Length: 290
Image 1 (cartoon, rainbow, N blue to C red):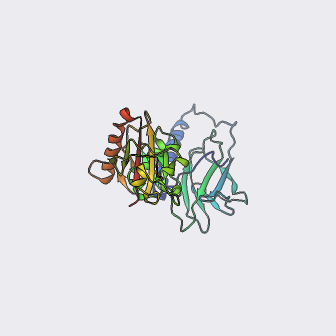
Image 2 (cartoon, rainbow, N blue to C red; image 1 turned 120 degrees about the vertical axis):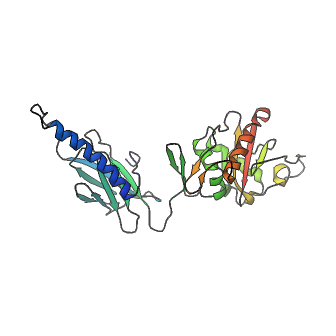
Image 3 (cartoon, rainbow, N blue to C red; image 1 turned 60 degrees about the vertical axis):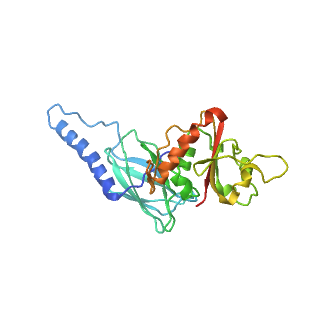
């Protein structure tokens, strides 16, 4: 039930304006249609009052939230969630409505929902505790992806690491974040968490680097002579055909990539790395912590 539908939190003014457009137009059309002598009678097969199930859960823990107040701002009807975080919401209109979800100690959520006779899927939403911050949001075209609570490294956000991980052609094993490398002795131990580093074709902070030759006599050879695990913010390793063609992106709070910004320079380095794949078969991009 919890994955049936996700409510979108939005400013109250914007939600009310959208709801007003949804409500006014259908009702005006209904009034015109009902003014003539051949006006259609209401469909008695559909009930006047319907019940829709709604669930409210904690954003971080996923636990159900008891005693959350859910108010239909159009009808004024209010319900309160039970111990299971659920409540039965009575709907008396088919033209859409706006809900507010409140609970002491949580940020309020506001959402517009559709209420047609065919809208029977249970609704699921989450509330964020006061004092907690939302995870970053990636916006690409008409898609918005919320990242995990640990996906907050500014270097990786700026350089598009998370977006390529979430929306690119490469599998998630191609991406290793630096938090997994803490406590390790060698950068090449990243292979235990995903793919090994392509030392024959490696970029560090956008610059192609020739890794020292390995003799096999020492552990600290190759790329391990240049970077320490504690210095790494993230590693992404691609094989032929996986490199993203379009690296332009927008990260919430960071702006969009263009050639005049640091993010734009990172995008150019990714394109440069893509051009080296044909002769090497793989490429690794290593991003260092600032």
